[in-house]
Image 1: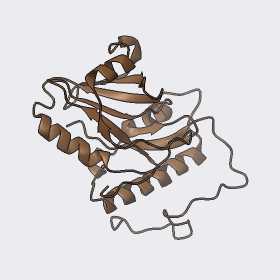
Image 2 (image 1 turned 30 degrees about the vertical axis):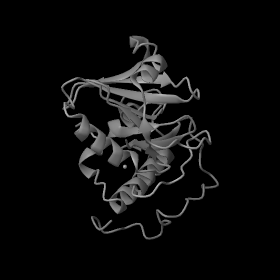
Image 3 (image 1 turned 90 degrees about the horizontal axis):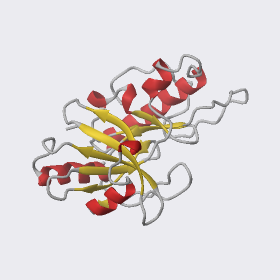
Image 4 (image 1 turned 135 degrees about the horizontal axis):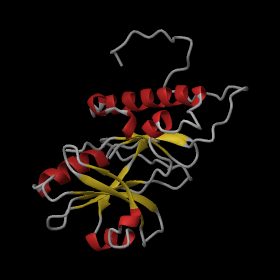
Length: 219
């Protein structure tokens, strides 16, 4: 990407799939993804269970409320107080039984609904198999919510720093680094710069041992 001089010319290109090493140990961890929550063309992408990722669209507040059992505290996945306070819920859409992550911002985080929609729509256009794809938003009244693919197996930060009894295997660490490079290259090509937001808390793992990266900025 023009930032570093490569010392790994013997490795396969990021545009090619890396064949598994014959002696590679299979990790018990899920695939990792970078949280995305933006592309100028509509791209067909499948999630980790083979379902087609739905197109970005608007959701009704009532639908998201029902998906989270009234934004029940039992459905909370994470909370953040930095920049734009928000709570992330695990939810299931009644229309198709799809598990999703629903990020609910505080009322003061995005006071302008048009700015919120513009930012969300830009991110929602970006599609990649290594991104946590943003699939919708809600901006009813003072409510500001985002709907994204659900990643059930925590963050890279937790796998690296908080699982002393199950450290992240080195082959998985190399795989994650390779996938991050793919995401950075793709986002750079889409003019979606995410270098300043890249950290271990934004690298998430799905059910099948793949990493995903989350793009949507806190504010």
